[in-house]
Image 1: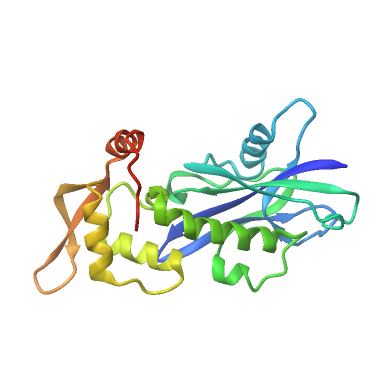
Image 2: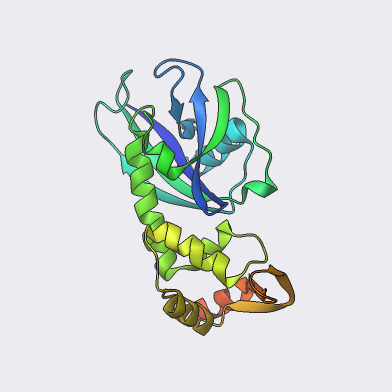
Length: 223
C-alpha cells in the first residue's frame, strides 16, 4: 500500500469560486484533469509532501491550507492500493504565477460549477465535493473567507463571496450587521469606484491581529 497527498485549491475571482487543476501527462488517466498531488516520500510527512507537490506542480504557496480527510477506497487507484491524505487550501491567484513541471501537461483555473461537470481522474471529484462542503461550513465560524479577497474590499465583495460559498443568496442587511458586529473590519479612508448615483463604496480590510487576540479569549466568528 502506498500513500499520496492531494490538494483541493480554491480561489475567488469575478464572483466565481474556482478550482486549480493539472492535466495529467502520464497513465493512469492520461489527459484527464486532476488535483495537484502525488506520492509521499518515505522520509517526509504528509504536510511536507503536499507543500512540495504544490510547489513542484503549480508553483503556488497557499495562504491557507488544512488537512481534509483520508480517502481509502481499495479501488480508487487502478495501479495498486493507494490511500490519499487530502487537503484544501485558499489562494489569491493575483499573487502567484502558475508554473507546472514534467508531471503535468497543463495547469489551469476552472469554476467549481464547471469542474462538477468534468470527468476528473481518480476520485478527485468526490474529494472536491467534500472540500467544498468543508469550506462552506468553515467560513461560517472562522474568518478564512477573507483569504480569498484582496487586501481591501467592499461590503458587497464580502457579501457576494459568502453567498457563493453558501450556494444561495444571503440576507444582505442581516449579513452586513453580523459582519460589522464582529469588530474585525477596519474601515479605510479611501472609497471604491462609484456604485450608484454619486455614492461610493467604503473599503475595508480584515483585522487579523485583533482576531487572533480575541480568539485567545474564546471569541467565536459566527456568520
